[in-house]
Amino acid sequence: DVKVTQSSRYLVKRTGEKVFLECVQDMDHENMFWYRQDPGLGLRLIYFSYDVKMKEKGDIPEGYSVSREKKERFSLILESASTNQTSMYLCASSKRTPDIQYFGAGTRLSVL
Amino acid sequence: RKEVEQDPGPFNVPEGATVAFNCTYSNSASQSFFWYRQDCRKEPKLLMSVYSSGNEDGRFTAQLNRASQYISLLIRDSKLSDSATYLCVVVSGGYNKLIFGAGTRLAVHP
Image (tube, rainbow over all chains, first blue to last red):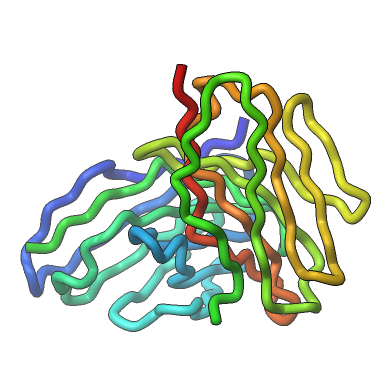
């Protein structure tokens, strides 16, 4: 079974804090993705990566950055958290592009 | 206009009912389509791929209508365990990205 693991299920941070969300996959997938999910808006792509040290902006990259130093790990960074970044964050991976994506359990982030 | 649109529901149906969801997409160049299922407070999981010829997996049938740019999901003999949100997913022709609809919520009651 594909396993995508996100480091935290719930996080509470303060405005202006730097926040790291970690994601690890164990299936040697080339591609990894970060989404946020908000009611009525569905999943929106923040960033994705097709290879180590490679990153591409998704549809809503503003206020976020990413890091992929190793194939299995893809990190999402909120440089200075703001209240409008309160959301559910989902990491996904896939073998090819395009292909079925497998999701982690999600991190529910609250920024106060 | 959103790239992928779904009726948000909720669809409230009794056990044993047949229910159908539609999803429309705007990019005529889209090539691949999926249905995902998401339980409350859980991650989305693939339910089934949607093939041009239509496909069936047990009680679930997916259809693609390219001319009208919509896909559908039919669930027969609904079970309580089918209660979830169903996400329509379209591979965007220009970028090979997956575009997710906002989801249709299904509630099956006894």
